[in-house]
Amino acid sequence: MRVLVIEDDALVADAVTDGLREAGFAVDHVDSAEQGDTAVRNEHFDLIVLDIGLPGISGLEWLRRLRARAGAEQRVPVLILTARDGVEDRVDGLNLGGDDYIVKPFEMRELVARCRALIRRTGAPVAAASRIGDLSMDATRRELRLREQLIDLTPREWSIMEYLVLHADTVVSKEKLLQAISGWDDNLGANAIEVYVSRLRAKLEGSRVMIRTVRGVGYRLEETTA
Image (cartoon, rainbow, N blue to C red):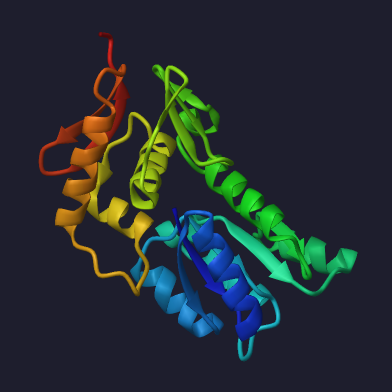
């Protein structure tokens, strides 16, 4: 899952970015609303973590403009992260299009849990389920099991599998998978996705779940009848 953090406080930005990366997210960071606008217009993100007190255009004004315009980026979930803890601030943030609101200082575990919850809400209907076929996925522990047998996954294999589960029975392009697992600092190409998918298929052998290639389009995770 790919997250954009829009935060001008370097210490907070580093803490959020590092914490989310440790939890398995691909994370990019910008420190102004203007940079955030450029990012969401040009790339896909599964979630935005937004500070209110930004230099120049405020976070709330940026959020209002985001929700007012058309386009795929307008629908991305936004978690507001701010030091403002008044009721009116919360109401304004949610009314302007925020999907959740967390006040600084915060527990990293709670932030991670809220990020995962927001992304699950915007995934396919199966996204909230922990099971597909004879596979079970525990997002909190980052564990994938085949008939209760733990499958050993690298961080990137986990990220790809998690994304496919969230979009089960939907065709996902290589580009979407690449964006979901890599940030601006990563040097990955579409061939890397093919390698990771091949490894995952080998680890899923014997299960009732397969990663099907849709030629010229991408991949689809689906339950088999065998």
